[in-house]
Length: 310
Image (cartoon, rainbow, N blue to C red; front, top):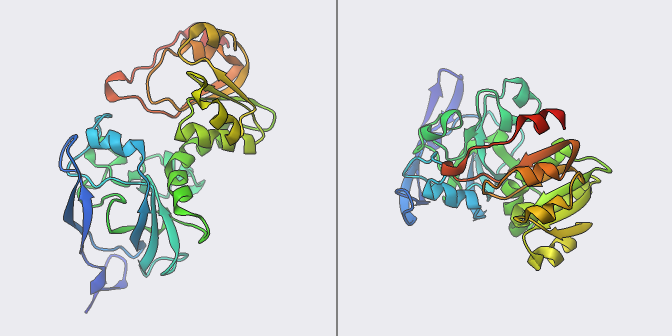
């Protein structure tokens, strides 16, 4: 049976109504995930329905499971590094087709009207994008009730077509999943601040740091990897770093790099003393923090004089 949605004047199938599927659900702060039935809301004409094939585990999912940032609502279906196959498309969709391979990441919708959205920067939507599984505790990034839409730890997802990223069939899922979130996190910083010939430091070499090294080099940066000890040297150089320095956490060693870098991209998810990092920058340099500290250690403090004059 079909029904007419008067607000859109589009004929919609009964199959577009609420859908029961299964997902791994975190019932409360820090609790183990449980396989449960969940009900997805009705499809909108501009949505696609996808079968989740693979999902990467981002440390953000662990932060959200444990409410480290104070923005989690429970129960919650985590996951935002999803690779999926499109199984249904809404009648208002215009570029995805059944059978397409897509990636699903941290955002599921935005206003799509503001200057940022119209420029393809939905991540800085002026009213706040809708996080894939964020609820009211996340403020403007969680406008939908948290239990209506979950993340990629589900057998089926429904999401706005605009936020299902078409992937090439030959892109392996073990590559695609971390690129969808971690890769995108550092790619934005590289696009904004790295250009040919700039001296770029990547601080902390985990998943984010490794991707940042590769992207910064592709954009023409002279890349130095910074870590606490020598254990990441080989990995960093293989990823493309021109230099490696074991100095983080040691103010004297960091001081030896005074005025060396145009850009520092810091992937460390803690809140270190910012002074030694700022000291490593050239005048008019850029420090870009992409690792998010815990909610109880979020305050940023630095002196105004060097901020203004250097």
